[in-house]
Structures are given as C-alpha cells and as structure tokens.
Image 1 (cartoon, helix red, strand yellow):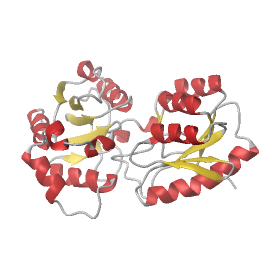
Image 2 (image 1 turned 90 degrees about the vertical axis):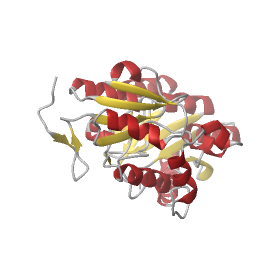
Image 3 (image 1 turned 90 degrees about the horizontal axis):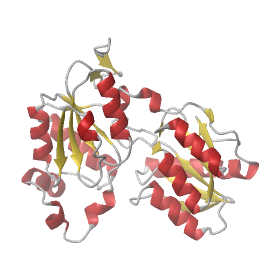
Image 4 (image 1 turned 60 degrees about the horizontal axis):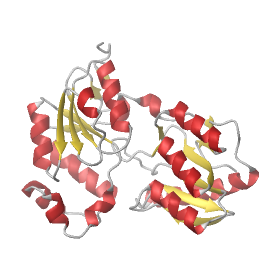
Amino acid sequence: MATDAAVLGAGNGALNTRAPVGLLACGGRFPVVFAEKAREHGIPVVCVAAAGMADPALRSLCTEFVWLRRTSLGTIMRAFRRGGVRQWTMAGKFEKRILFRPWRLVHFVPDWRMVRFWFFRKRNANNDDSILLGIINEFRAEGMECVSALDLCPELLVSEGVLTRRCPTKSETQDIALGWHLAREMGRLDVGQSVMVRERAVLAVEAIEGTDLAILRAGELCRKGGFVVVKVAKPEQDRRFDVPTVGTQTIETMRKAGATALAIEAGRTIVIDQAATVALAEKYGITITSLVSPPA
C-alpha cells in the first residue's frame, strides 16, 4: 500500500516516500520496526545489516539485503548506490565498546575509506556525535543524505504521563528529579543518556557500555535494589541517530538488577513495543513515567 504523502518529517532532511531508502541496521528491534513500517507504506528498503548485531528477520522485510561483515564504508555505499538510494537512515544499537578491542584492525578488516575516516579526519573526540556526524558527511559527499527513521515511525516516541498503574513513590520521585538533571548534563557532554540513583546518591552513569550494562553495574553496587533509572535525550538531540530507546530488554535488565522505576523523556524517547514493555513492567512491579521536565 503506497502512502499518500510524498515526504514525511520536516525540514530539508524529510523522508521521500516515493524512492528507495537505505537502512544501516544494528542491534535491537528498532530496525525491524522501521522495515515493517516501510513495507506497509510500499517504500523499498535497501538494508545493510551489521553482522552479529542486526536481526536476521530484516532479510525478509527488505527489498535488498547485505550483511556487513567488516567495517567498510565502501561496502555500504556501493549497496546503497546499486539500490538507487539517495536517502538513508540508521537504526539500532551499535556496541561501540567493540571499537576498542585488541587487534581491532585484524578483527574489523576496514577498507581504506574507513581507515582514512577513523585515523585522519579532523575531530576533537571520538564521542557519538563526532563519529556519526562524520559518517553522515562521508555519505553526503557521495550524494546520499541521512534522514531520521522517526520520520516514518513518529508513533514510537512516547507521550507524557505515567504508563503503568503504579506511580513513582515520593522517594523515587526525588531520585528521578536528581537523576534527570545529571542525565541531561551527561547528555550535554555526550557521555551517555542514563543515570541510576538510589536515595539521592548516584550509583552509575552510562558511558560507552550502554544502558543495560550500566543498569547491571548499578545493581551490583546497590544489592538492596530499589533504585531508579533516568534516561533522557541530549539537549540538542539529533533525531537522525542515538535517540534514547527503551523496550522489553530494558525492563528485563531492570528486574535483574533490582531497579523499581524508569523515568524517560516524553516526545524524545522511543519505546519499542510499548504495550509489551508496559505489561512486562506491570508484571515486575516497575513503574514507568514519561516526563517533559523533571519533577519538582
């Protein structure tokens, strides 16, 4: 079924729904949800999927599909070019910590373009924004513009309100208020998006390990449990990449670690499979609250 609109989203980067779109897919459900939505709208998807991270289900959902088994910018560009892609998007979680494993050049077998990009580009740091904006510029130089996957799936952004029957307790609300300000500052510094707090003490701050491992680390440091997880967007969040995302895996990790409350930012956080995520939280007695600003 073709969509009635020629473009979705806003601004110069709006998604053209009458042309093939490239998808650079990493881990998690988000790439699958995007591919399913694109198929509903009759949009051809040319997918390059990171081997060992992306869901194999993408193969049957996309018009063209290629496994990316090495860190090769050239492989991605050639696949997109063959598929007639002028716009592309990225979706899913990339396990950035693997970039710092020993003998990484041997493991990743980068092509010359990736070597040149990684070692010779001008940058102040190897944080997420620096790397991803640099990659976007590499594709732009080849006539391919990056757009936001949320142009096609805006309903994934969570609305304001308490999603579960149980509201946060007074103590949890105080921890959320503290964690919100800290998480926002960590986002401004492009360190991470999540902070774990118990009794107004910071247990863990997310960095390169990602949200799930940060939650587990907080659980190891707070054996009694009962802590909150606060996850917010960066102050100047680029919707094309690194949008805060939670789902059933987040809730499972929280239960394992002993967390009892999850606070996320309304309108700026993706909740994958929201009904299932909320149902799982209800089962474990975890409260989920979506806020536009920190509680007083």
